[in-house]
Length: 80
Image (tube, rainbow, N blue to C red; front, side, top):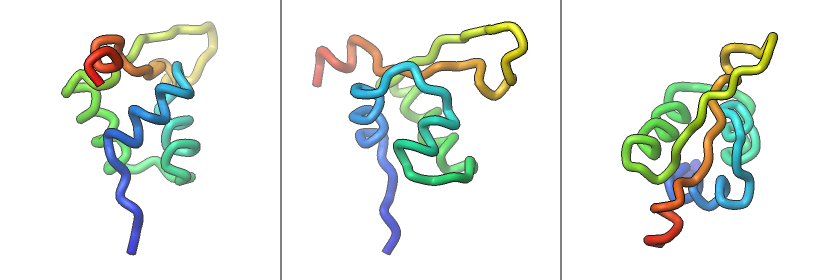
């Protein structure tokens, strides 16, 4: 049986590892080397529910897939 990834798992991981890209989250939090729709949807659902937030970071010559850094919102941490 496969382990199901949850928003709470994502929030717990981002609490200890803030400011990570989507690819870093998938590789380290979910222990998966492939980025697919299910991981992207999980991250986006957590964004829309307000559990996590993202900030756009633009460095010179950075890959467009690494534009956003994700972190746990302060309001979610206070209401936990």
